[in-house]
Length: 231
Image (cartoon, rainbow, N blue to C red; front, top):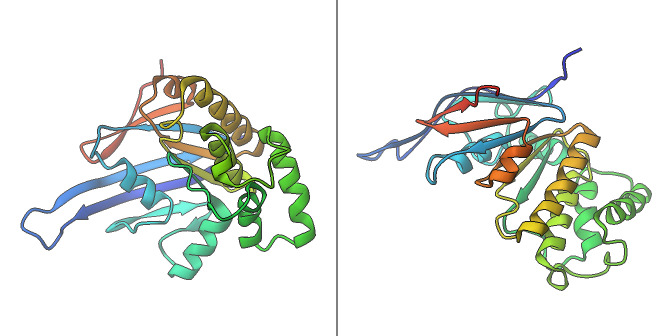
C-alpha cells in the first residue's frame, strides 16, 4: 500500500511587485508533493525563490494562485485563524538561526507546541522529559538557550519542531551555522525522528552531505520545481 501524501501543491504562482513597473515572478505553476516519512531536499541558487516556496508551503505567505493541501486540509482556503490552527497542529519549523525563545528554558521551549495544541497539562511533562532524553539534554531542561552550544540549541529546535508529531517539518538551512561534526549529529537526530514518527521533511540546503541523505532532490529553477532523475 502506497505511503500517504502529506503535502501537495497544485499550480502555485507568486509574483512580487505586481503593481510596479518591473514585477518579479518567483513561482510559476509549481507542482510538488511529499509523503509521510520522506526526506526531500530543495536546491536553488540564491534569489531563486526557495524561501518564498517554503513560506507558501508552511502557510506563512499566500500564493497569488494555486493551493497547498496539508494533511488532507486546504491550507489557503480558510481564514487566518483556521490556518493558524492547522499550522500549530500539522507543521514544525527548523531555521538556521535556531529561533528558540530566549526567555524560556529548554523545557519550556519544548513544551510550547504541546501547550499551543491543547495537550493536557499532565501529559506534557512526560513528553518533554522523553524528548530531552532523546536530545541528549536530560540534565539541561532548566537552562536557557544562551547557556547551550549552537549544536545543542539546534537539537532543541529540532525537538520542538517534532514533539507534537506534525505532518510536515520545513527546514531552511538548519545546519548552516554548525561545524561539520555537529551538523552530522543534528541531521542524524532529525532523520531518526522524522522516520520514526512518519513526518515528511522538506529542507532547503546547499550541503552536499545533506543531499546525499535525501530520498529525493528537487531544484527550484526558472520559477518551477524540477526533480532529479533517479540514479
